Amino acid sequence: MPDIRAFRTVCHEAARAIHAEVTGFRIAEHTTPGYHQAILESRGRSVAVTWIPDTPWVALAEPGDDVPLRFTDDPLLANALTASCEFRVLTTAELGRPFRHAEWPEISIHDVRYWQPATVGEALFNRWD
Image (cartoon, rainbow, N blue to C red; front, side):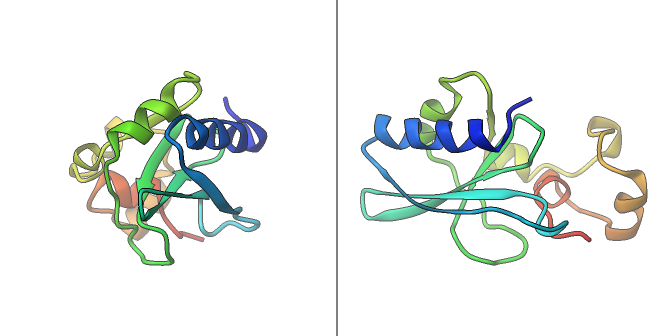
């Protein structure tokens, strides 16, 4: 599984590959949020590369503290991020699918029952405590 160092490295490599700049990292130091973010700027827009620690799952989102995250697709950036084979970028279509616990058994059933996520994105990229 990738670690924080791999996440930082892959984000910098992806930024170079698409002529973007890493402008910062938001590293979760507590239980919430349950993800880290790298903020990349390119072509006049910003995107947050959002990673769940100890997993290969990455999503692209609009930077900010919105809950739930507003996911976005950027095929050029997604291809650059997956070049290392350490990460898998989930698309907005995948993240918007209805959440079914049987498809994501690694997510605590107790959290699922309590928080009742409607979509895959809500279940994976959350601010649950």
